[in-house]
Length: 496
Image 1 (cartoon, rainbow, N blue to C red):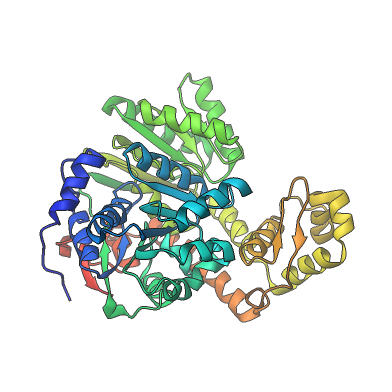
Image 2 (cartoon, rainbow, N blue to C red):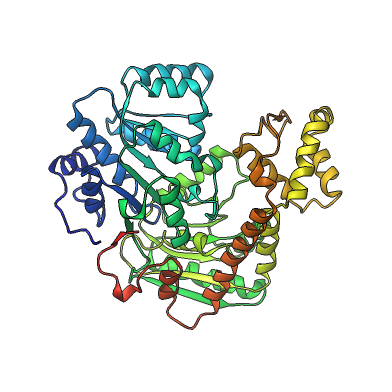
């Protein structure tokens, strides 16, 4: 079923201009917004920075005004604690009554926000899915009428997505608690399998949800793959790309998988007097914020890991280079989508060195511990709590895999146990406590094996992309279940 174009609500356009300072909606924002205002459910797949947030923020404000009800509230569920404050601060600067409640708040501030929530304050409230485990939150929320539910980073719903969050699998339960509100789920990437899983986990049927999918059919992007061998060839390609960016005016992002590689190439660029920023997850939060602001305000080159990109909406990025092979088509697709948003020519180059695959295969192994490993971790958490409190993470690693410091399966295991809420506390200094036994999904050998195979297939798809002789945009569209670029007319592709 294809949607017929409908004019966007006049109030929506007024809010866009007066509160967001924008003249008109990007396509297909206007259709999505009208669809949601009509009380219909939607799944929106759109590159980061292309305006996904407006697709629920505008309907939330329109519905609040139309409801003329102080108890009306739009709820946004997101796993990204680090970005909630930024989004809320931006909305409040526009005069919008928005807030967030998550684990970053102290007890007193959290209780104050619960009180305000129960009394009818806030037009928009951002929460993590884990918040629904808190009785005091549910009590405050019970006084409100949820007029819209937005699920951001919706790929986290699917265990086959690239950032599975177990609490996202409770979204059908959440919708039932909220009296089945109009729902919009949003993400930057999702294969057909993940799209179907998102709809199923929401407790909806395919014919109840309209899919809006922005493909990679952007004529200004040139997708390239360079087969290279060794760091000298890689450096040469990077320098050529920087020359291109500087000649065109604008900025460039050069992605690395390993911080060690990033720092090595950064040093070589400094030796050549080539200015650039360096951004990775080991930098403290203030420094990362400073670097991100500097990048946004200037024409610049940044060498970064995939920690860089969230919240980046810079129109004049002339090049995105993957200096090392990324781990999946999903990651690659999301990252190249940051190039050329101003419509001017931009290049997206993958530097394909087969030796980089060894790193990604090792990452896949680390991110997929087997049942035996999870059981050993759980056993030590249960029976060696005193030694863990005394000796911490290093002792834990040594007990699990002797002196192999390159093995990071423990990091994955602790992360998954935290997501399933079977542990809580900090790693450094060690304050972690075991709250519950190992959850069944982490003991299911068949499920764990299938997850490993799925991750391997994602990497293999990227290898196929690098080796393909067909049109690369067509390859990406086929992978994500989209019509070929020349067959795509509206960005909207109807019901799932």
